[in-house]
Length: 470
Image (cartoon, rainbow, N blue to C red):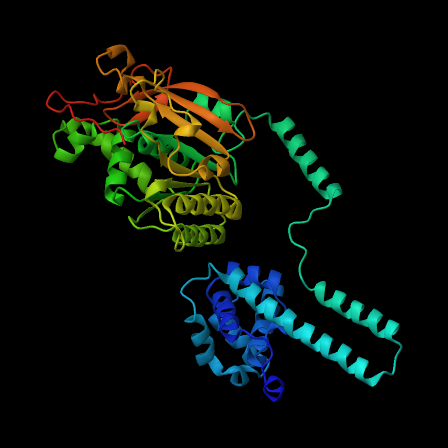
């Protein structure tokens, strides 16, 4: 019992430092921490003072950073008491990123609640030993005190029907006035947009196909349309191709020049105008590329959060995230099987879509079953998704790419034909849409575009017959 009396109250000083450090390096992190914590939640007095100064600055809509917090503490004559500017610098270097500020803040909050419960329980124990009040009165006060502590826990995720109903009615009214066929992010393919009404915020979209069907091509087409035509920011994670290879393919597709001709240099000089114009358009776009062959879902989420925060400070919003492709990602920790890891990745990407309120497109491989001998229909279906049933469960929309010409290469009438099969759509119908595919420049177009525009260059030289489809 003697040892128990000397025991320190629950605390997490390291987490307190991490919260304050995150708040110092990113304004958005400061706002998120202020939603969770109050100054009394900090165990260390100096941390309470620093946090209070940050809260006062934020309340006045002032910047919250190393300089402003130091000046605020100096005005309050508390800078030396918290350790000076040197300690603020130490707090900033405590964390490499502010992405996990909410996690640190909840640790601090939990320790604070435990300390208050200890104080409350100690008071109840003391009242019981004194026997100055009837047991019923002590019990009533104890219940009230515990209830007061429990009310410090924020009631998260609970919305009253009266508020929700009016919010939804406002959305219905806005949709009625706007009468837009595409309410989400447009893919650039009219038939697909008509079926899906665009890629919706917070949705996980799975685009799956067998190798050489054009998954990467479709993803790049969508990203290109969003950044060039919609003028919206896109984050593209490439786990298989380098950033230079990605940009090469984008420029080749936009300029409508054969990719192999570009790579080898065997293209007529007259196509330079198309290439330089395409390059200029992408140079001015809000496309962000991450090429990491060993990317984990946690790292992807951290990068996406940081970019989203940076864009918000510029009064812009991240519109779309693309992952190429899911099977090359790593989970966040040790798992017993690859199936479990894919399930973890799938849940992580769905959480990312919900957390940032943006559509996340994840490309995925299909199993070999569509190509098995004896299977009459080679079109993919949901059961062909590789490695985990969680993919089908977590995805809000599942689309397959199917090109019959891949299986019937001697039929020239099928060469430009392709189908996008929407096999699952949580908020809409399923169905198949026809699109055109030019394998020479790895580009999907609306099915009505049977030929390239008249002002576009020829996409294939006589010397070059190589094609790219992934």
